[in-house]
Every structure is written in C-alpha cells, then in structure tokens.
Amino acid sequence: MEREDYFSLFGLPRSHGIDPARLEAAYEKLSFECHPDFLAHAPAEEKLRAQHLSARINQGYRVLNSEPARAAYLLGLLASGRKLDTQALPPNFLQQMFELQEEADEVDGAEETPASAALRAKLSAQLAERMEDIHATRARLFTELGAAPTLDALNAIQANLNSERYLQRLRERLGQPE
Image (cartoon, rainbow, N blue to C red; front, side):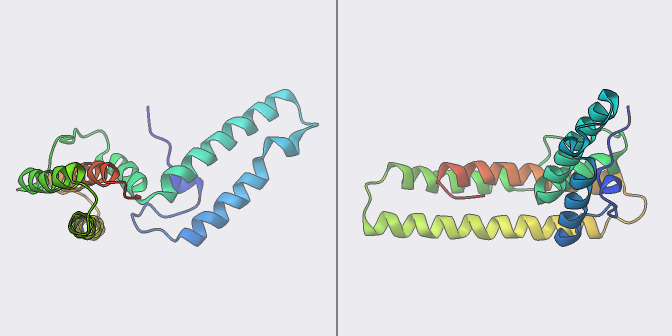
C-alpha cells in the first residue's frame, strides 16, 4: 500500500524545509472546503467522504507542521520501501549520552542549591545546543540528498532522528520543553 502524500495534499513540494505560512494557508483553505459541518444537507455518502478527508487533512497538518514528524515522514517517502536501520546512531553518540545522563543523575539527586541550579542551567544549555546541532545537521543532510538518495544517506538521516529522540527523552527528564 502506498503512503499518503501529505505534501501533495497541501500543494507543497516534497521538501524538508517547507514554508510554514504556505502550509497554514493550505490547511485553512482545505479545512474550510471539506469541513463536514458545511455539508449538513449533503447526501450521507458525501458527508462521510468529507469526514475522511477532514481527518486526512488534520493528520497531514500535524505531521507537516512538526519538523521532527515531517522529517521522519519525508524519510519514509524517500526510502520507498527500502529498509532503514532504525537503531542507527551517529558515531560516539552513546558515549556522549552516557556522560550527559551522568550529569543529569547528579542534578536529579542534588538538593536545590545555587551550585545545583547552576549545574542544571549548564546542562540545559548543553542539551539545547545539542538539539540545535541535530536540527542543523538534519537540514544539511536533507539538502545534500539529491534526486536519487542512497541508502547510506537515508540511514544518516535516520540516525539523526534516533539521536534526537534520545536527547529529547533526557530533556523531558530534566523538565525542559520540546
């Protein structure tokens, strides 16, 4: 079964970097055109089609409006059925995460003092910087893909997405927003 192409549904190019204003405008237009409430006097079959289309539009908007979800979705489209390494991580990533986990353990177990607050702030800044690096790397990887992406290039993006999930869990543990 072929995957739904949300980019086509919203009239957007298949691209990692989309124009958020264009997505929003397309979403509003599509939502208005097919909203089931505007079909109160339509036949039941037409109402049902509108409900299904409205659900697809809402799901597509959620996916395309979130950069990590859009990246994962686009990766799936580009992979075209090729098996990606869903466990892949960048080199040395686990060692770095282990060190960050140890720092987080130190912060979690510490009594709230100026020193522990400073350590928490330092760790939060490190995690935010790492997340920015992950996003910048992912944007670069998508830009470098070209017309016929190789499996190695797609797996590099998969590893990037996997590393973001690790880092996001650590940020959540420390009470940091997404």
